[in-house]
Length: 497
Image 1 (tube, rainbow, N blue to C red):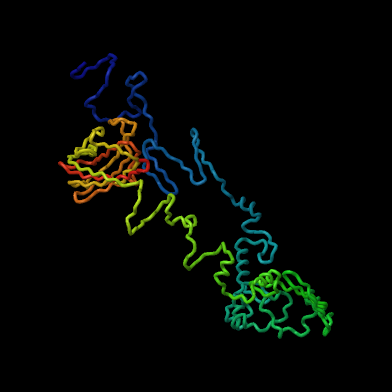
Image 2 (image 1 turned 90 degrees about the horizontal axis):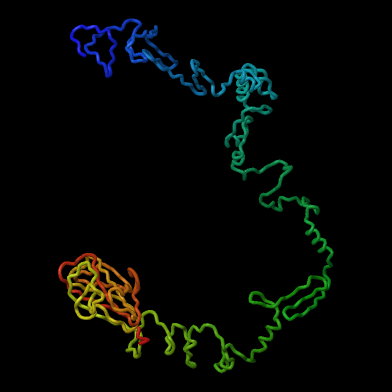
């Protein structure tokens, strides 16, 4: 509905959407009134809530908040040992840890601040306050000690101790030791009533002639003195002997018997029966030197180590030679290098065998089998030119490889495959025996692939009747056609051939 000019509508109007008032003049709301909506969303006028507070300020012991207007919220925070709580219109401040009062302290100590009570000693006066008691202690502590008077003691220096005239200072153990030059200077003492002497043994000159009485001697010493006194002197003593196979006993009628033991390597003594028998078996006029016939007659079967001399007896049997000595019969293993001046005539069952191969190929990264028959390599292990039959058991020792073009920038892997004697020669029946890889050789070098140790995998051994094939694989392609010269070194055992 649109009105132009003034129009008074006496009907009740309801608006289903927002109502906007435009061109509203600024004015003052009538005192005590404000405009709003009632519960039916009707525009109504209500009485304004008014008061006399126009500004709030908060002042505390450590700061002030000024000029707070409108709705203001205050926080009442508790300090150490204080907590606050609010319920309804009541604010409660509570002490969380109890504070001790003067009466608490008085009850705990049993005294008051003006009267500390009575004391059992004579240093602290009775019925005095704290300051008076401290003053009494200070006065007592400042009294210097003197003969018959308790007090503060000052320690004397070494020089003061040596002077020996001060009556108010105490001597320390160190000063006593340093007295006029140290403990060695103490030359005079009074009577030592108690104690135990633990110093240097007292010289005889400082022991009085009558100082040691019979009561001070040990009982064993007294007994020996009495026994010696009881012995007769200047009398005849009868000696006798008792013989034995290994000793001689001398008896005394007035003394102690003596036993003379047999002679040994360290002490002298009597000759025993055994010693006599050994000496008695020596021939008359015997000397230190014996003839060959004398020694031969002894039939010696055991001797010690012969350090020098020349053996000129019967040839030593093989059984009595050391294990490292070469024997002409029996099985024996030799280790280390052996040099012979003449050719060795005989047979050996284990021999080295060399197979040479040469071919030309443009070899990429495909595994290629070298020709063991003819000159053409092949990528198929079942090809007839890449395998051969081994007549006896053996081992692949090394592969020597020389190439026309540089292979030093690639990794070359050489593998050995086999077909057992009872397996058909084909692509699905072969088995990888062993593999060895290394950096490929430069054009002016020879690469050696050792199959005897540190293989990438597998073994280098094969049995009689197996077919073998050898392959070469490069980790990256070598450009254009290249000549390959391969030497295979085998070890073959002909013992069962």
